[in-house]
View 1 (spheres, rainbow, N blue to C red):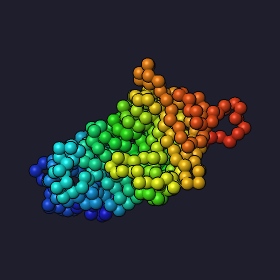
View 2 (tube, rainbow, N blue to C red):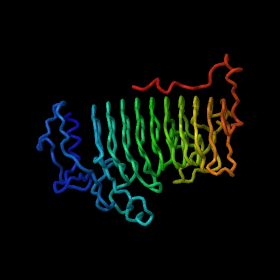
View 3 (tube, rainbow, N blue to C red):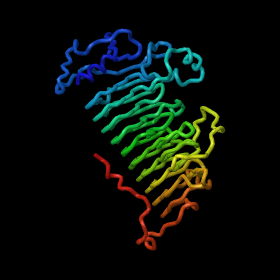
View 4 (cartoon, rainbow, N blue to C red):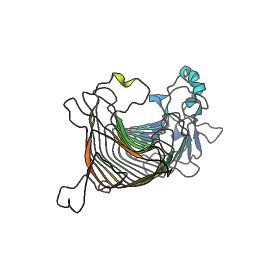
Length: 389
């Protein structure tokens, strides 16, 4: 609890209103002087209201580790909110093209709104997160995390405003959230394992993504045991996405997307091993290696497509000709176009696996007949409930 109180010393309490303003005030307040007990049992959170960022980049005095609100090495931290609990990042001046020159002159790079670093047994619930300058919530190097009942909001044209980013963390459980941003609703990145995502309404945004990983040529990164279920994608750029950089190394394996609803999604199912985010010219990257994507299951997808390609497997070969997308399995997929007159298609390259009861048909995967193949080894279809805690 003392570490928690120490972390709160970074928070500037603007005494003339109910708002918190971090990175703007030049004075800090010790919460022990205001009645906090810090005995591990007493609820010290009697200060209610909104936490509001400075209105312009020029007002920021500092951005510690490119974060606005930072909790570092705090164990057993519980942050609960209600309908009035709002973290407002005032991100608009950071996103718009007309303000880019002003942003470049500010003392800060675009900060993420809320970052947790090396925090174990963390619980975050019940808050509304609005218009972060960059990503809304970052979970880095944390273990045993439960995130629930959040509402994360930013316009679809707000660049890089991910809802929740997970890096180098394990045993992370995210459920029952509404997320609409200008980037990934949830991104599960390098070093993460045992991540469970359930009951998420995503849109607008870029979907729920594994990656990107392997960004620098030859970089070794891994993600494993990711289970996404009972999620809805409404008007998003992507639905279920795995993205790796060309030339990287490592693996993304044991991943399942299960019971997914699609409403006008541009790319409902996509594995992209040639990902390049457009911020640099990726033509220089060679394909001597690739992050291996394996043991992936897409099960029970239903809904509509807003573009042309319902399913995209843009996979790589390594220098020795080995496929880098292995054991990709699909079952009970039914994707139709929002335009009845429009044909839909599937793009496949360098992938193997199985398909069963899938529409549109996926020609690059082996059709699997559950009766004929009853005695053969099952395609990868993990129990999505196995790792819930």
